Length: 89
Image 1: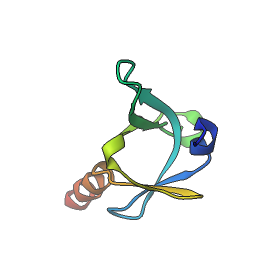
Image 2 (image 1 turned 90 degrees about the vertical axis):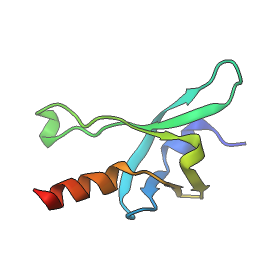
Image 3 (image 1 turned 90 degrees about the horizontal axis):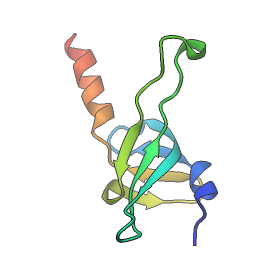
């Protein structure tokens, strides 16, 4: 058994680029089945909270590859897409 509080202290890392995405801030549970559908990584504030905050990242449960003692490895396309867009500009 794992507690939600144990999830929240683990770093979430994207295996596609090795980038740390943040920490789990919330989970989405299907009330009909009782299963976890996704984890939500809260967007971080920018420049001391000015200019709003980054959008939350939703990782479907099927994209969680491994839950380790300190790290949760996930497959997330969003980081790779942002890098590609920045390279084109």
